[in-house]
Length: 381
Image 1 (cartoon, rainbow, N blue to C red):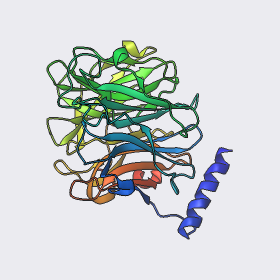
Image 2: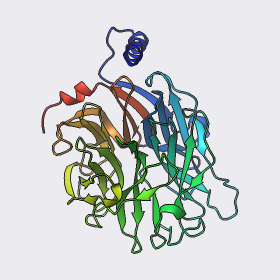
Image 3: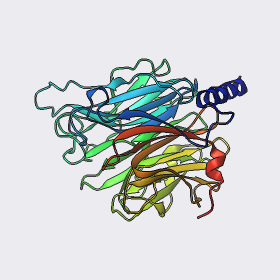
Image 4: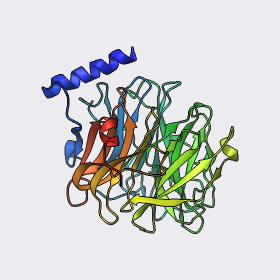
């Protein structure tokens, strides 16, 4: 059955492109500034569902390109043919912008995870009622005090979505100024546990990367310790499970060091008893969200703008040794590019959703697909 699906997907792409073999990189713009009257689309997340459907999520920034607070919703698009064609956009998280004093009542920075056991899909996001975004969220648990960690759930492969489910009181330390998701994508561990990368600002305002997990398919959630204990300060992480079962976290270094920060979480049997190792730095990074995914064959793939200072040159790299070393990678987009997210497609190719174009690298949300072997064949660094 699976082999038949792969052959069919390959045939569809070959037919659509008029060639016996499709080129190494297939690209399709999903959202462009101004589409459907929206000012800007940002913050891509991408996942492959149990059924093999691709689900793309992103911010719908109605009035401007600015972050929360503002009139922002979370949108989604689906593809059932490996990214060749996509559904119309639909809004899956939206709060009433007419609430007095709500400053748009925005919700954004989505992070998606698909449960390959139950088929359910979860999309997490930050809800800001009033000025409760990154800068002015405060201690407490209520929407009038602090940004809210919310999720929506689909049980029909992304066709319909539940009302928002608020996790804030379950997992946020009330002394922290803010706690929310990734953004990007989460993972499912080999034992079925769902994991979402997360971030928080502690009582002093310092940013930290961590993750939350659910051992009961999203019914309840728990939180890990900070990946770095504050040195370096980090946020906007992505996560992968390594061959030995440990977890690798790739983080944005908020000190603008010019490199990506990494940390490894060792655990046996119980995530609550796990421990972080000493963090390290590797791969140029202009303080930007990045993508990370592990292929079934054990290879890690990483995506980001390959510059220490500028959001340009979207590049994908591969690691055969659980992230200890990375090759020089393949250039996907030479011009302005920023946030990105990765998934493994049902036919084994790598899917990438990324921001690109314009003076601020957020003119489009673009999907790309390419063979893993193409990335592996890149030269060593």
